[in-house]
Length: 98
Image 1 (tube, rainbow, N blue to C red):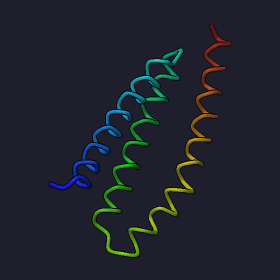
Image 2 (tube, rainbow, N blue to C red; image 1 turned 60 degrees about the vertical axis):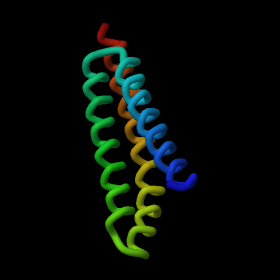
Image 3 (tube, rainbow, N blue to C red; image 1 turned 180 degrees about the horizontal axis):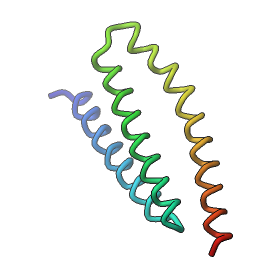
């Protein structure tokens, strides 16, 4: 195994661990049951989307796998904005009802 392969594997493992820790922290830092349910659902959708994206990169031939980056670059920021607004709205609703 050369240094590039080791670095790629190590980077992938470190990224996966970071994603798991980030997901755990996001769920743990919710303030109510409705917000927690939303964060879990959004996290599952996000993980599924990343798995689909990586699968496309690995299994689709050139140039189609490269085009996946365009969709990823557009859809990811839009999803983050929508999910943040939704979570903020749920958080405000739960805060006002308590």
